[in-house]
Image (cartoon, rainbow, N blue to C red; front, side):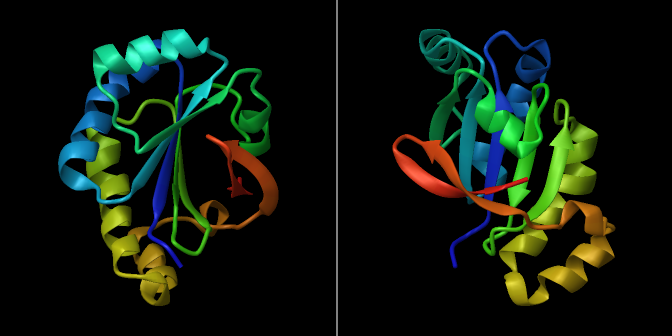
Length: 155
C-alpha cells in the first residue's frame, strides 16, 4: 500500500480554478506530503503548461484529459473538482468546486491528518470526522492513464 493521493481536475480557462490555485500551492509547499496529481480538463496542453508556469505547479504529476472522457469516468461534469484517495484506493472525499479556506480547515486538512495515520484506523476516524459513507465508497475500474501509466480509477 502506498500513501494517500489527491487528484485535482482543473483547466486554464476556469475562473474558479484560478481562485483555488493559491491554496493548492500552499498545500504543496506546507501542508501535504502526498502525491498530488493534476488532471487538465478539456484544455490545450500549451495553455495548461503556460498557466502552470505562470501560476505555479502544485502537482507531482499532471495528465491531460483533452476530450473529457476521463473526467466523465470520475463523475466530473465541471471544474474544479478535488478527490482525496486513501492508500487503499478508496475515495475518502470529493470536493465539488473551488477549495476555500473554510473547506481546507474544516474538511480537507483533518481528513489528510487522519489518512496519514494509516488504513487500520481510517474507518473509525472518518466516521468521527463526519465524512459520510457515501463519500467513502470504492468503485474500481482499470484504465485511467496519466503520463503513460495506468492507475486504478475510483469515482
